[in-house]
Length: 327
Ligand code: 8YV
Image 1 (cartoon, rainbow, N blue to C red):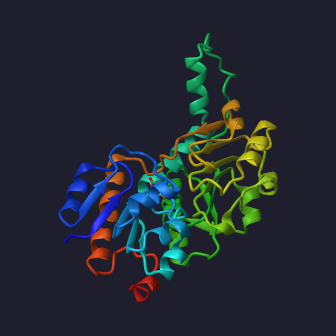
Image 2: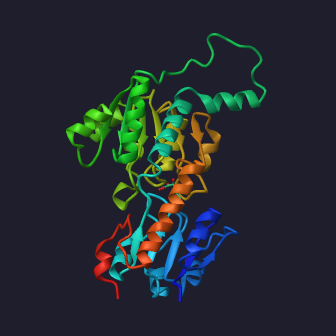
């Protein structure tokens, strides 16, 4: 008998077809968001799950689904999964690193340019019928070239952002818990600085760090107060890293010049203050959303699930300790 799996949200048909070669598949192609007990009901009796960032795998779900052996996330960030609880009961957890690096770095740069060069604001202004005559002295904003790009969280995506900055002759500074080896710093032309220095010096500060309890609100009122009034903040990492209420208040009083935000606390709900501001560019968590990349992510997650349920080590196993806790 084939193992049973649940695919939690709508994904590519070709990936479902691949999984059907290996498993008995129940798939939610109506894209209903199952939460808490409803998700537990769907996962009960399943051996594996292919899930997205919107699906929360917590202690209660784990306790309700004793057959579950593998949870494979389509996404590099996995703060939606209680990995420690999975490890304790031998559930293998995987993610999809690397395949989205360049797409997400492209988006980070798009947001740097959109925020600095007032692209969304200009677009909205034209659509509102406000463009009556062209004026030489209108729309005078900052440059991107030769500005200082700060990167908080210099993992694989942060490094890809840094490499793009070379094309704009930017100075790149970064802060990371662990300083990068010199050869990577050279390749990225990036200088390690303290978090305070990063906040003080950056003209464009890109957040690229994973969410964890430790990183919750790591950009709040105190950190924003250190930034230049001419600076722009770009959050493409995870909601919750920025205190949205503090950012809204700071943008409203001109504490920093602008922001671009792709990820929000409690998304898709967002702080209502964002909608009243014209110095923030808002996008709906689309950092990795190119067709090719999303397909690569879904395929990689599916390959992880096939390996995990066939007794092979999945390529992107996050909790190797779970292997020895399997019953
Ligand atoms: C994904 C992301 O599309 O990979 C991540 O961590 O934030 C996104 O690019 C999302 O997680 C889908 O589950």
